[in-house]
Amino acid sequence: MGIFSRITDIINSNINSMLDNAEDPSKMIRLIIQEMEETLVEVRSSSARIIADKKEVGRKHSRLQAQANEWESKAALALSKDREDLARAALAEKSSLEEEAIQTESELTSIEGHLAALNDEVTQLQIKLDDAKSKQKTLLLRAKTAESRYKVKQQIHRGAIDKAFNKMELFERRMDELEGHLESYDLGKKDLADEFKDLEKNDKINDELARLKEKMKPRA
Image 1 (cartoon, helix red, strand yellow):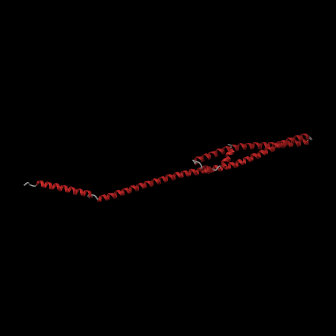
Image 2: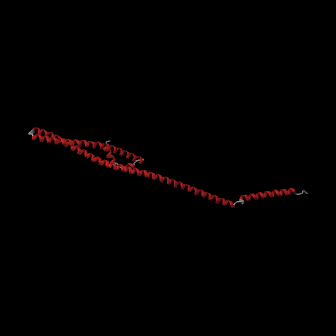
Image 3: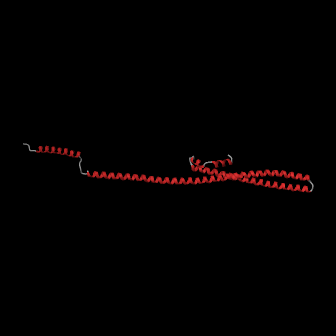
């Protein structure tokens, strides 16, 4: 891809859309900035060569004009000496140089137009680059903010969980104490089954006692 095609693609690109569709916006913005900076380096190198060409063509144009003026002076000198043939030859040289000068002037105009367009594209590219760098700072700030908020939320969530567990433990402790109070009222008391067992035990003892008394009566 040519450098000017790359500039056009970058200028026409929608950075926001590229970031929205990227899996890793931070990585994407770094690549975009790197591409723009590399393109700018290439553009400046190309601009330097074009400016050098402009200076060279400008010097050639000035030299051609100076030579054309010299041949006109020679033609005037030839006429003053009644050498019309030489004057004609000198003017022919002048005409040839002027035609070449016109071509170099047209070339200069083309170069200047090219430089002006290039300068405009570089300006737009620089604006895009500044925008990308601004978005990079925004993305980094958003990432740091999100990370900080996540840590705070995590701490709050952890605190809420701990608080809930503490409440549960406190509730269980209260239930244990309440059950303990209830059980304390039953201390020393016999339940219905135990009372029946005592009755049965007493009947058995009474029977054994009667038997023993009967056994111990004197025999007649």
